[in-house]
Image: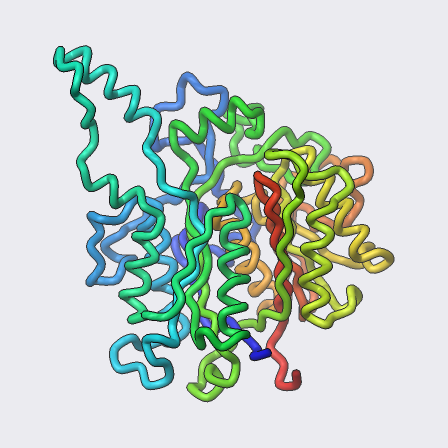
Length: 425
């Protein structure tokens, strides 16, 4: 199998509109949670979110991309992908290292769908116009902008890619599956370079309504939003919805070294499983998550004692945090006590389809800067959740191998093992 390395990354997140700023915010323990401003949430039990702030599409997007055909979250995705491409030093005009058919795109994203509020507006339109057949409240181009494949098409054009194009919609595991399938495509020779990651924004009227009715969101911190996301804390009461995009350039190792690329990290293993349990809950015994982590570790060839850091899914919901802790303990056994474990969602909220991408960014930062980002708001340890969750403040530590998790609604699980690049196999 071919070795696969990461040579570029980009990000648009609630704590930074590029990858360096996002990493600096994670390392500093800076929260991006605040009042929800995208619509009037006054009648909702939850009025907070982790939103992207001060994003300028004109400055962030490639000059040849038609911004009018991209949704808000699509712009985040294309901006992150463009940054990753530039960070990797990939020249799309006359690039001599990769033919167009050697380049591909794999992205996780939520499936585009009509906004329920627009359907309610149709009723208002019919009542005010007296036309029972009136149904258009939005411009027809929304049929394009709501399509999750459109941002990938823009990324492929910018990358001059005609190779594999993989769109994944597996909820919170989306970017994990996208990165894993891109890893496989390069391993198996179907591509030599893949742009991979995820983008999502469920900070909409419909999503806030749905997650609130499910009881998945915390409603206790509307007046103190930075304390709302508290993974593994005894007083956690649900997750905070977020938004953003994270993207990476993956390359076949020998090709990357031949062109003189800077290698950020190497992908060593990928695991993917399905719980077949419940739609919104993780199994209390950690099954599914256990198999995903074990699969990624087995492919990496690393013993559990070689992993220094686990970037947890860590949503701040009761069931997920307990299930994931149980799974980590079962997988790592006696080595679990020496692990560092933390959840970036304590700062960014839940980026859903982009969440594993954010965790990979945190893992790369830990490897390159010898610093593990903290878990914010971990004030009261919960009984049985007794791993070292790096509370409050980042921890200096030598990190050479990282396990990255994402466990989704619907039961999809993904884990990746990434490590510092080594000359030997």
